[in-house]
Image 1 (cartoon, rainbow, N blue to C red):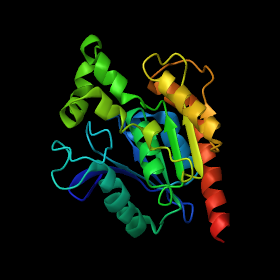
Image 2 (image 1 turned 60 degrees about the horizontal axis):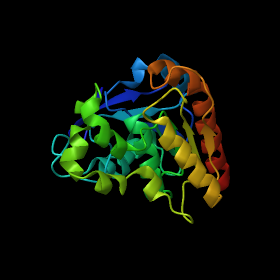
Image 3 (image 1 turned 60 degrees about the vertical axis):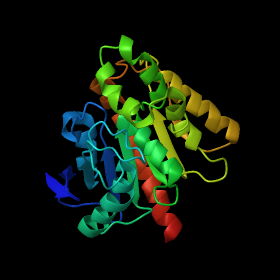
Image 4 (image 1 turned 90 degrees about the vertical axis):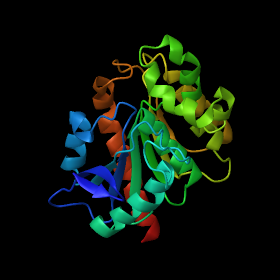
Length: 248
């Protein structure tokens, strides 16, 4: 565990790291540590990927001041500036060698940030991304986990304003991350529709991506995360290799 810019971060430093490559892992709304996902952790260690995993609470990784996280810097800017600087200083890795990887809330965060900063983060991967967070706001009163969406109500105060800031609305038809992958299980009743709609939009715009939307079982759970971890990390490794060759 380290502290970066006044906030805790989980750190995975392999003994023989891949040169010029690193991962920033964005956690979900329940704040699970990367080490809570055995398959994902084992894979980044196996392949020698340095990882820094910042903690941002229920911030949804937005470009809005979230007082419970920080009163001076937005979660998005913390990732794009503070964490990116830490990766450069600690691992000697700079863009485009930094991949964003996230699960659930962090999955939508990885995609959304990459859509907004495709030159900085050309590689983004999401597992069970909670893309349509505005829908969760609408349903919060009827959900057992409704309290997890209080932050969204505090920040937006309105479902439509929230929808305008979701990942799908940040997809630019001419400027997008060169490598993007997202995985969602049809059994994920709350979030799968958003991933399917994102896939449809990217197809319609002719934007290259990889969408893993076939049934794997597990829905929105660590069980599902671990089932697709191999495919996602292979995608990230291949994408980072392509970026390295592109700059050679």
